[in-house]
Amino acid sequence: MKSILSFNKIPALAPWLLVLGLGLHASVVQAQNVLIGSLVVSQVQTVYVQEGQTVKAGQKLMDLDDARYRAKTELLQAKVTLANAQLQDAQIELDQALDLFDRTVTSRRTLDAAKLAHLKAKAESQIAQADLKMHQAWAKYVYIRAPISGKISKIFAPVGSTVFQENSPLVELAP
Image 1: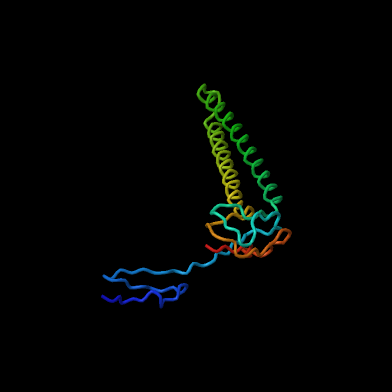
Image 2: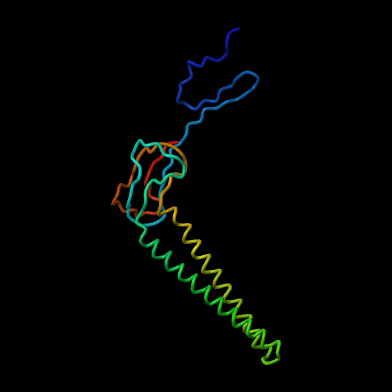
């Protein structure tokens, strides 16, 4: 029996859809290179890889200057600390207002004001924590890691280069 397909006539690198017997399909897909960029304006501080090097997903590729990122992180952490202290103070005031109200020493209005101040302090604490988390999510644009395993095809931004356009390619990675 003679085979219908002659595999030696199919170019090795072309993406072809092969029809094998019984209606089974297989495809050879040409993988595309991945361009890795950043959304922050900064300067390349450290490059951990070289062109041609094989990397694993999650491996550190480069760091951008993180001085502004770290400073803002410290500022937001201080705001979280302040908001939490204000929340604790509001809790003390609320506990005192509840105690005085239960002993009929103070009015309902004073108790309601303490409850409202506590609610406001709680919301401000949550906002400060959310701001910090949102800022920390930007770390992936300051500390560049490989999104997939592959081989470094090209490094567009050597140490000292300034990244000034949003999502400018820094590294090209071939899967």
